[in-house]
Image 1 (cartoon, rainbow, N blue to C red):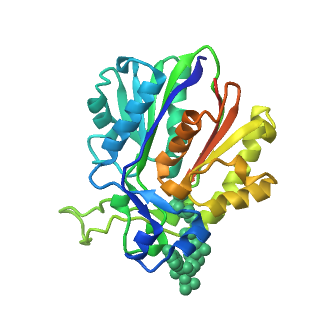
Image 2: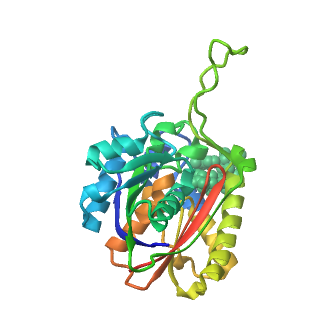
Length: 325
Ligand code: ACO
């Protein structure tokens, strides 16, 4: 089996900052409530850019950081719950934009775990020798599926994109991977698509709003349970101790979830790298934006280990231990 290295990271967020005060003019809420319940102070919201536009910018950033020729990319996996269109895939739109003519491209849907699932998929293609260079993107325009009248959800989300380049290499950069799903709890986080409503349908269904609804408490409980389990299991499986993991990058959903998990694991919350205070929850993009920040700020050096963990709609979850090369 081939070894897989992460050779570049990238990210992009829209320039428009929307802080909690601005939201308090739209729904009945305030900065104190949002910060104390979530840790979120502001988020970036797209004015015009769609998911492919942000994904393209993150991809270009990652390609630049990896110092590769775009023609080397043989696979583009794009994780999103907010594609530009059903067809074509957003991955194919990015391919067109960056002119990665040698790539096979497709989208995956795993909500906030999408970035982890995407790396897992790309790594398998490289390990088996099918492809040698892959671009994995997590990108979301959650603002287009947010109900801006619903204070339970609109305070949480932001827009953005992130990317990594994986390549066949001499050293192993992906130490261990664990993923899972629990479809029986899918109702806890829903964004409906188009109902069956054709000339054969007996009952006429009206088009739904197409916005996100969520059972916040259910997601909270699931997130805490799964994060604790994954961290414990993955650390044991990798043969490292928790002390040897430099950073844990969780999906950036809610700071209170992270505090709970840190307490249950008996570790300092500072081990968890967070930026949700300034970006909110960007779903499939969130882990990659944080990973890119860690690399670009030189917070890690060769040999350091990072554990990335996603959880989200589906319900889905997954983690990867990365070694910085
Ligand atoms: N501002 C002010 N008050 C609010 C707001 C708001 N934005 N939203 C809800 N409230 C009110 C409620 O109406 C309720 O009022 P009531 O007691 O009069 O009925 C009260 O605050 C408490 O509401 P809860 O829903 O019980 O608040 P909770 O403490 O559970 O916090 C939250 C809600 C932040 C969503 C929490 O459940 C949570 O963080 N869950 C995790 C889910 C998450 O992070 N999801 C992100 C997307 S999913 C993902 O990424 C996987």
